[in-house]
Amino acid sequence: MHFRLPMRPFLILGLAGLVTLISTAALAAPVTPGGGQMIQRGIERLLSDPEIREAANITDDQIAEIEAITYEARRTAIELRSQDQLAELELEQLWAADEPDAEAIHEAIDAEMEIHAAQRHAQADTRLRMQSVLSDEQREIIHTTVRDRMTERREQRQERGAAALGARLGQR
Image 1 (cartoon, rainbow, N blue to C red):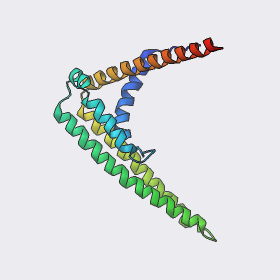
Image 2: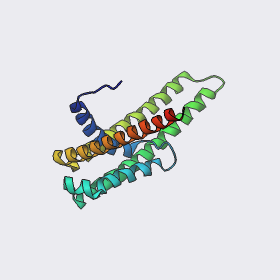
Image 3: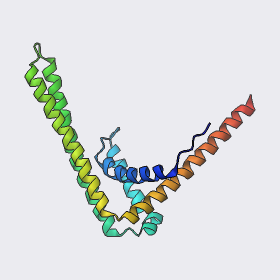
Image 4: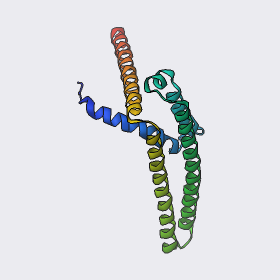
């Protein structure tokens, strides 16, 4: 059974998702070593794609500005992540005491929450800076191109899945 949803919400979510991808991905903690670099390469690959660059008329100056924003965001993310890890380590140490100090634990939790707030603020700042580099029209063109590619890939996966299922059912 397939459910069909209206396309307009997907368009809005997709555009928001693209901007979020560019900004948040730069600040996201990598799941594996080098993960942040993989995200940056994905963003650079997307924006250096000749089809997208030509369709959206993205300039070399815009690419350079986005690369600078991404670099700064990754540096900030690394710094904040290390602060967060140190805060977690400190909290673990406080909990490990024979008689945990409630006041110190609460202060450590507050310090950790301040770091989390700083991470969210950095993500917001990056997203706002990224949005200011590209025009609304450029973002829409990028979004449409990415959405069309995602739809095409999803359809290809569904076709491969249906063919594989058919082959398995035919073997029974």
